[in-house]
Image: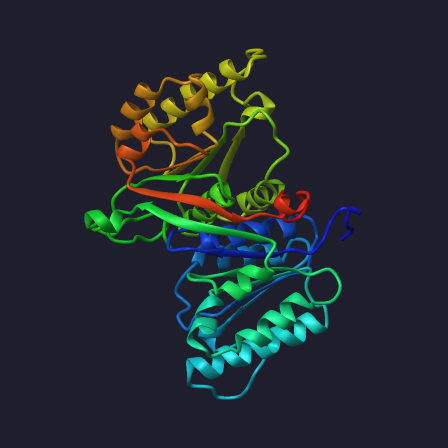
Length: 182
Length: 182
């Protein structure tokens, strides 16, 4: 893939109550894909109905250039045959895999989508996550998305953006709609 | 493309000093593309070096399903043979085309990327833009991105998100890098 001498691996956090946290992360996936990076996306959400566009695009693009690996907790993860019913167990299983991938330097860009939730719920140990992310070997960019990012994560991050809601159609009784919000 | 009865066309504004404004808009492009919408992206920036990943992805996806039309001011726009040297003239020419497209209902989703700048600089008349966007016919979603969105635009928007910088690698002397920020 090739890095300029000035490049350094970034830990990016997209947080806040507003729209665009995961979507902005996906934009980084596309940039990385366009540059030939190996990209892994891990969605830490039980529900898999969101972000149809991103997933469909990733699937289409996987056949063009380097692949984008896209794993979803909502499907019970693809790598495990264990029958995990509980979200806490699934989240923990997801983190274990991510930890292995980081140790093995599998990806140049790793997206941990909605990962702040299992952290906030205590399903995944924050101290361990901070240690693994801060001490990751080689050249691995990591993006974490989700509301209410823990301060310990913000402390070790390089780039933190808060998406703030200024005005939302919900406020005027307009519901979320296909093709725009998912 | 098909709309649910509850759907209504949205005017979306992504503004603020933080990262992710255009990237989040591009996520909406992908969702719309995945749903079979006709999508037009107009980049109101003289410089065309940004967002290589998004453009490359859009190009790749244009051969799969409905096309994504991607026009850049930095290239002098594709539809005009006029030799426009000045950014103000180019921006005005871009807006004239967008106005024609809105009148003709060419797109289901129209992205006016970095459009707040020509508005702020006075290159494109704000009153006219507000009138055209607020009165657009049919079912056309419009997304406007850029810093410092004018209040008149926010007033007529349905969904406004402010991307706020919490922490940026620039603050620590780390420069922007390929594959992540462009």
